[in-house]
Amino acid sequence: MLDSLTQFARDAVTTAGYLGILAAMVAENLFPPIPSEVVLPLAGYEVSQGSLTFMGTVAAATLGSLIGALILYALGRYGGRPIIDRYGRVLRITHRDMERAERWFDRWGDWVVLFSRMVPLIRSVVSVPAGVLEMSVLRFTVLTAIGSLLWNLLLVGAGYQLGAHWEQVAALVGELSSVMKVVAVLAVVATAVWLWRRRRPAPASTL
Image (cartoon, rainbow, N blue to C red):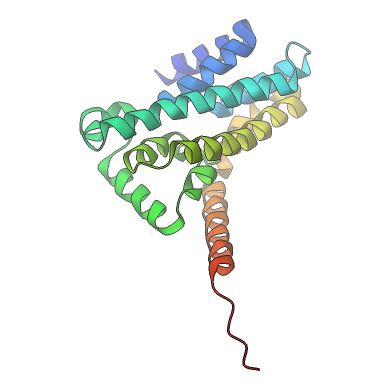
């Protein structure tokens, strides 16, 4: 199943260009077994061959990511928790995942969405809890777009630089996924502390 989905993503990129990249990234959000670590470096390789432009590729990938994320957000927003009972297996999200996401949102707020978009596996899951918890759709859209743009720039750029060796990116991302999760969590904590310090009232003068 995974091999066939990955082959679909490869065919979409090589035969349908920007539209194929957009479709593959929508599918990557809805069917997490399709790895962006394969789709985007391959697209970067196509850029290096002159078949595509760098900015056009990143734009198509980011738009596809955003569309897929908004579909999942809408499912969570209008389906609520029952959507997890009914389709959790398809969406690859469990009640345990939902409880974990709630703790993240309680502790770090909406910034979880931004940093989760740059972490493998988690990036596809966070949209449903954001919808269930009724996060502002505008804020969700902005943070998802920014996080997706950064992730897409990284992987397309890596594929472009490696050229014919673009497949090494997927292996490297797999090895670094745990590190990336830690970095993302630390970034969220740092942001939360920075925001808290900004909002904290200044100490009264003793003079």
